[in-house]
Every structure is written in structure tokens, then in C-alpha cells.
Image 1 (cartoon, rainbow, N blue to C red):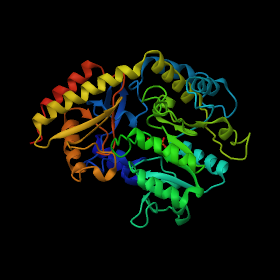
Image 2: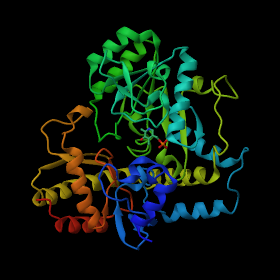
Image 3: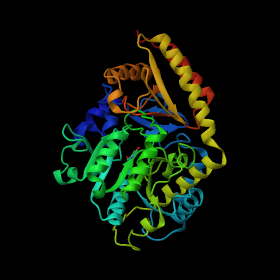
Image 4: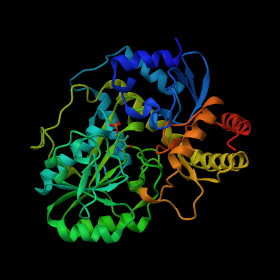
Length: 425
Ligand SMILES: *Cc1c(COP(=O)(O)O)cnc(C)c1O
């Protein structure tokens, strides 16, 4: 069986042949590759071909696939229990570690995905403020919960349009959407709806629609205006948490978010999410408070222990500074070679161990409308050229790339050689 045969079979039993849309290669064209295993910086497809992986499961694998130390912990855990549905020490250890390391995390609740984390955090914010409306920004992704699967509409500033079928008008009416990087619209939406806004939800480093690095002053103005109006601030750090330094983006501002959500890295490659923040807010959650939230597999011991081992390793080995330098060098060299092989002038941005390639433009891209219109097509060509040489980027031009600790200089040299052999002219 090769990948295209497996894809044909998959399409018969799963919508579009996949269990999450981007995996289908719809954005880049062609049939998706089916992988059978991963190790370090490499994925191996079902026919035995190796690829250097820069998608890394969309972010969780900051140590690479099956890091040896984490794998030991996972193996050990498999022989204890797979799930308890009861109290155990593993979630306690992970919670204590995070609470002791991150000052604005006074209490934390584990769930099983980033979506669940954000959904629950919004519930807490609404309960605390007694308000219904949520403010979000175009180009930020917060998972697939109804309340945030909306984008700005064509009508009044802040009025949303659905990003998906099946979202009720009632849900949409409670979500306000404005562009990133725009203090004026922020002021306006608060002038109009300030007393109704429970929480402003933002990816402090928007990394799900390209990498839209925000001005520090913009994020600071969110804190200022939200606080003036009694609204809470939720930093969705599902992608940036434990990746942008150990303490995430929240570390970079004087003001701290009231609520934070985590996912991806926090489970070391297993399905874990978390919402966290101020004690008085988190104490609203059942059983200590009236906000109901529960999970059969929450605090799963494999995810808890893999997560803790991952976070400890990140901290002890100072992984972030290593990765930051490596990513800068990588992107610099990559673009240099790429531009000698391509008629298009490519540029790109990095932020710690995240990167995003796009057509070279003069001004930094901070909002989705600044992304060049040919981006999707340009990226698809680059993607397939690299794929054929054994380099796997996330299969969409709107996803970012990641480096892991397993992406050593030796591995990256192989990427440069692969790039030397492509031709995009
Ligand atoms: C990935 C992501 C989510 C959703 O997490 P899932 O585990 O896929 O549900 C939410 N917010 C941000 C910022 C993310 O990057």
C-alpha cells in the first residue's frame, strides 16, 4: 500500500480522508503522505522514505519525535496505569511545577486539548464578569469552539461572520472581531460594547495564520483598554506556551493576563491542554465554584508525565536559547539558497523557534490583509519542491514551521543540500 491508495481508502471512511483538515494537503494540492513512524527530526512514510520534519505535529514536539528521555518516562507509565479517572500524583506534580515556575499561573486545570482549554477559560471569564461578549482578533485561531470560530464580517466594525457552517447566530452575536495591530478599532469596539465584554482573547504571538508578530504597544493597549472597562484578558498560549522561552509570551509584558491557555508542548506529544490563571478566577471552577467543567481522560498519566519530563528538560537544558539561535541561522541560510533557486524573492520571519516563509515584502506583516495574495500558490510550489527532496513543511502556507532540539546543525545541513537541488524558476 502506498500513500495514495491509503488516502483513497481513508476518503471512504473519514470526511475528506482525514481527522483534521490541514492534513489532507487541500491547501497545497496533491495527495497527503501517510507516515508510519517518527524519530528525532525525521518522519518516515509508509514506503520507508525519510523526511526532515518542520511541522512537528503543529508544535508539540519541541524535543523532536520520541526524545529518548521522554520515551523512557512514557514506557514506565504504560506499566503503571493508562487512565485513573481518580486522584493521582502525576497531575499534581505537573501542576506544582507550572505554578512554581509561572507567577501568573496561581491555579491550573488540565483538559485534553487546546480547544477545550479555551472554551473553558471563556466560561470562567463570563461567570466572573457576568457579561456575555467575547472580543477576538481576525487571524487568531483559538481552536474550533463555536464562540471563536468567527471572523470579522463586512458590516459594522466588530460584527462577526462565521468561519464555519453550523455556528448559531446567537453564538456569533456574542463574539466581536476586530483586526490585529489596530488600536483605533480596539478603542471603538470598547467605546461601543465595553460594558458587555467579558474577555479579550488573543494569541499574543499569532501563529496560526502565518506568523503575525505584534507590536508590543498594541498588546499593551489591550491590557490598558480592557482593564479600563472591567474586561478580562485571556492569552491563548497554546502554541507559544513553553516555546517562546519557558514562560511564554506572557513573560514579555509588565501586565499579566488574567487567564492563560496551554496545549501542544504541555503534554509532551500527548493530548493535554490546560487553562490557568488568577486564583480567584480559577476557584470559580467546579467543584470549588459554580463553573462546570469535567473530563473523563483529564489528567491522563501518560500526558502528565510526558509533559512534566518535557518541561523539566526544556528548563534544565536551556533549550530555548539554543533553538532561537539555530532558527535564526537556519532561516537566514535557507532564504539565501532559496532566493538563488527561485524567480520569486522570498522573505521570512522567525520568533524563537518558529518561522514562516513568505514573499519578500517591505513592511512587517502584522495583519492577515497584508499577506501577499499569491502566497498560497507560491507556498504550494515551495512545499512540493521540498517534499520531493525529503523536507516536510506543514502542508499549508498559513501554518508556521518549528525547529526542535533534534534539528541539529547536521540535520539542517541536509536541508540546505536538498534546497540546492530544487529549481523554482
Ligand atoms: C493549536 C491551537 C489551539 C487548538 O488546540 P487543539 O489542541 O488543536 O484543540 C488553540 N489555540 C491556539 C493558539 C493554537 O495554536
